Length: 341
Ligand code: SAM
Ligand code: SF4
Image 1 (cartoon, rainbow, N blue to C red):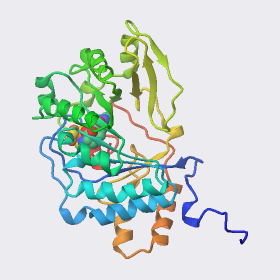
Image 2 (image 1 turned 90 degrees about the vertical axis):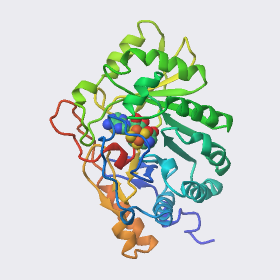
Image 3 (image 1 turned 180 degrees about the vertical axis):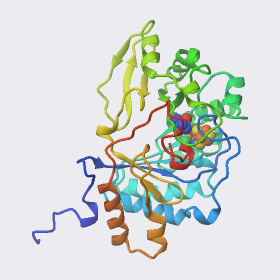
């Protein structure tokens, strides 16, 4: 045995940014396309990317696997709508090999749920254990309006299908003043009644949309105060390195997450970065920094050169975002569907 045998291979040394934060979580957007057009996420008429600009399944696998080599423990596939990407299950199966080796601890997915009936069984077989499903309301008409045409029954059936396949489901709901504000307790009770955690999200100023975000924005501080007028919320010490703070609702027994990028900033413990489907690496959701990893791999970079490019990007991860809802323009020009929420 040489003195070097018990050292981690060069590639496996963790990714640490300039502020000492270890980056161990990759959100990978596999498409900018979606079958829905949520009013806070997309404009009604979006121009989607030409195919040549989007990373192939092999390229997505290569870059994600490079992250796993550099200590990434968790990958969340997102979009756009990830289940709209052709060959999505292939990608899931490829990435799942890292679960098999133990290098990756978790492979999850954020979805709008419309295709979960079709895919849940195969996702579970491939090694996915949990999915996040976005659902902002229990009212079919409001759902249709918020998503510009979506069918709530299909999403709820998708949640049931995922649970039947053994996946644990977390519901994500964006809190929207005037739309679902009054209904949030019902939505929470619905999720908890089915054994699902639920997380509420404040709207973030990302990308131009038709609606005025100051009209949409609802502070979760106010929501929490309202919930506490009839429920007992017990703070949970759970820290996922993510933006959510968790409470247990004593009356339902379920867990509730609150993502408050505006009313409470969460950057100091941020452990995540995002890769768009075009290979742009964003080390902060709320800043315009980006590193073009597609250019790196399409120029023929070796794995070692790709690792150097990733490390350099992580070293420059900004300290935090400066979202502010009342600004005339979005904090970042790209939509959430481009960056991958
Ligand atoms: N299509 C999938 C879905 O809806 O779950 C995955 C992508 S979507 C961009 C991921 C999450 O971002 C969803 O929960 C959505 O509600 C949220 N989201 C989109 N735009 C947002 C915004 N401007 N502010 C806050 N959350 C947003
Ligand atoms: Fe599509 Fe998800 Fe954006 Fe809604 S939030 S438009 S489902 S990508």
